[in-house]
Length: 238
Image (spheres, one colour):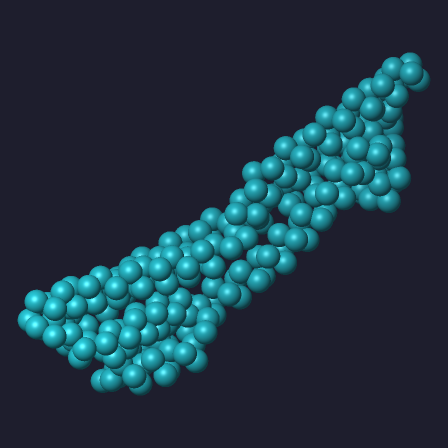
């Protein structure tokens, strides 16, 4: 007759797992539960942020390539606060406006040429600074997901090892090492590993997805900056 093994082969009783857990096991479970909730909240927040950035960036690009005046593009871009591309454009346009206000004050031909060269460099620096700032904003807290994905399985494994050691100590004290007495406490200990994987897997998947999407934004901002510089060189620095 097979002995009754409620935890190993039957339905898992989470109340019993928590009740029978040692202080360290309970601390591990609470830690994993906390980081899991935090990572899911961050996943939802970042997914919303990146989706909004994608939608507004497409709207901005449509406006940018269809409009005939930079001022009109600037007014539209200011309304698209979630778009990294619109922020890059606004930074470049504002720098270009400053140059336009001071450009007429230059005297001779050499001064004019120097102003043109310096103006192009100023606009390029403004675009690069804005792009870097946007990437930093998009990457904010994403590293937390990578940390959760990398560390949670080991934290869970630590809880499992502690639980198994405690179970074996209890078995040694009782002097009874049947399958029924071994399976339940070992099953309780393995629950910590399962909790670690439950926290890690969504975090790793989300981290890789977000990093990939952010790289796309980085490439798009670099390409847009190059296109914008070419446009202003043709029209403002001839």
